[in-house]
Structures are given as C-alpha cells and as structure tokens.
Amino acid sequence: MGKNFLIISDPQAYRDRFGDVPIFYQHLANDHRINLFHLNTNQVLANNTNSTIIWATEVKNDLTYEHFLNLTYHPKKPYTFDKFDLTFCRSLKPFPDSYLDKLSNWSRQLLFVNSPSYKKEQIAADFLLKVAQEWIPETIVTNDQHTAFAFWEKHQTIIAKQVNSCGGRGVYKIWYENNLFQVDNFNQGRNSFSNFSQVIDYLTNQTSAPIQFVRYLKQVKEGDKRIVVVDGEIYGAYLRRSKSGHWVNNVSGDGECILAEITDAEKKAIASTVGAYQARGLHTLGYDFLLDDDGVWRISEINAGNVGGFARLEQLTQTPVMARFVDWLIDFSESRKAIDAGSYSVVNC
Image 1 (cartoon, rainbow, N blue to C red):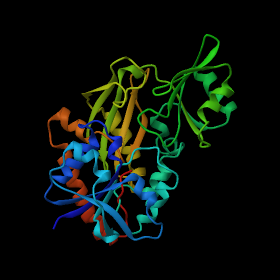
Image 2 (image 1 turned 120 degrees about the vertical axis):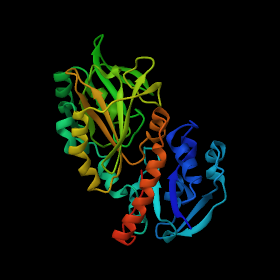
Image 3 (image 1 turned 180 degrees about the horizontal axis):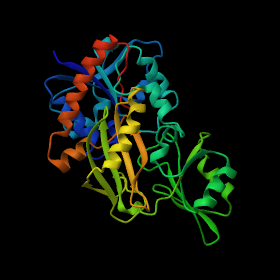
C-alpha cells in the first residue's frame, strides 16, 4: 500500500526547478513505497481549528516542475488525520502568526519530522546562544539600544539577525563610515543613519522580538559552509560563496556552491550541540559555518526543519543523497509510530 506522506509547502515560493523542494517532491512522487499528498501553506490557517479533516491534493508519479508549481490549484479531497503516516512541513519563513501553534495542535494526531512546538522555541533569538555558545562568535540578544550600542562599540562592525526569517533576508551588517551608521541588507540594500537609536528603530520596525547581534567575521567572503545533518548523522558539506564578493553568500542571492571538507572541529561542534535538537524532536538540521580570523570555522547558524542541501549534495557528489534521506523518513515514520502509537507529530518546518 505504501506510506502516506503529507508535505506542507508553497510551491510558488520555489522558483528554481533544481532546488531542494521541487526535487524532493519529484523524488517522493516517483518512489513506489510512498503515496504523496500536498497541502499548501496557506491552507493550514484556513482549516477550521477543531476540524479533523485536511483537504489535500494527491500527487501523481509523473510530477514535472510545472505541475509542482501549480499544485496549489489541483483538485483537493478531504482526508482524516489518521490517513497520514508522516507530515513534513517545507514552508519558508517567515511563518504567519499562529502557524506553528496550529501545527502544534495537529501534532497531537500527526507524526511530524520536526516538532512544531519546539520549532517555535528554536527560532527564538536566544536559542542558538543557549545551545552553542562555545561554538559561535561573540553574540548578545537584546532589543535595548544601549546594550546593542555597547556591543557595537566593542566590535565596530556587527551583524544583526531578526527571528523568523531565511535566505539572508533578516540579516544586517552594521558599521560606521563617513560620520554615519551604515546598515546593509541583501534585499533592502544600504541605508545610513545619523545615530544608533535610528538603527534600532529600523531593525525593530516590524517586530517586537529581541535581535541577535553577532561579531562580524572579516573572512566571511571565504564562503558559508553548509553541513547537512539528519538525526545526528552528517550527510555532507558544501561551501556557498558569493560570485560578486558580497558578505552574504546564500544561494538565494548570487552564491555558487562547491563541495567542502568537514573538519574534526566542525564534527565536534555538531556532536556537542545536535543532542539539544534531537531531544526536542528537531531532526533535520543545516549547520552553517563561517571562517574566523584565527582560521577556525565557527557556527553562524543551526537551521532546523525545512533545510536545503540534499539536492545540492546529490548534484555535487553524484551520489543518491535524496534517496538516503527518503529511506530515513520511511524508517522514522515506522519507528516513531511504533514507539508513540501515533501520538508524536512529524512536520519539517
């Protein structure tokens, strides 16, 4: 009969036909062990709070990229929660208000790859500082302008990171030049401010959440190393480097990718932090490392849930990385169901 997998995503957000999510859908659709179902991200909050029915689209095995993009408009049928053996949320941040709360309610009856309730904890500004302080550059979490200014005075060039964002969209470089504070963002470009309080107002304009401030690493143009980890097991690593020399190396910008080695120090950093995520039911991780002035690659982020890298590693290594991941998902759905009798939820957000 096959396993019934429910994937939550917004296909229109994935405009690269060779990207991780389109390739992932095609892989699942062509796997005879899996019956694939799609739920659009915006349907999560549209669903009645107390409903035990999900209106989903069954995905056929001849899925092309063009069909993937239009899954939102394909016919939907009602299914009860017990229809699905595994749910994987591949929605991009920022998550809408109450989105993770809704998925947390669903997780009482659905098995999620990554716990939505603990995902909510993980995206908080101070979570990385709690679990990986030994392995990251000097970092503070605050929305107090005096505390942030003192941090800037110490380091002169710093990075500010907003919560609930991805692809470098919520990351800002701050420094002082030509008698003005300069703030640069990949999407918004460069802005100048006469005082630091204006910088804070700019960063907190659309959020009341604390901001993470990090010492800027001058070797950032050497690239951003992504290491893909599934349930504590390292799948591989690749280096993303901006073709234009920009300080943001994301593939969503102009980053290009080359295969990378994983150092013993990086393995040690992963081994010492991954348990905090596993204990919270967060199983798919993307560790990002940047090169520091002392030649050590330090953790800049630990992404949990909807992480990219499987398709990229497969392309770079010419090995079946995606098939390996799908095998793990099937095994996970069977083992968790046996252990928890369906009470645990699997969503990869």
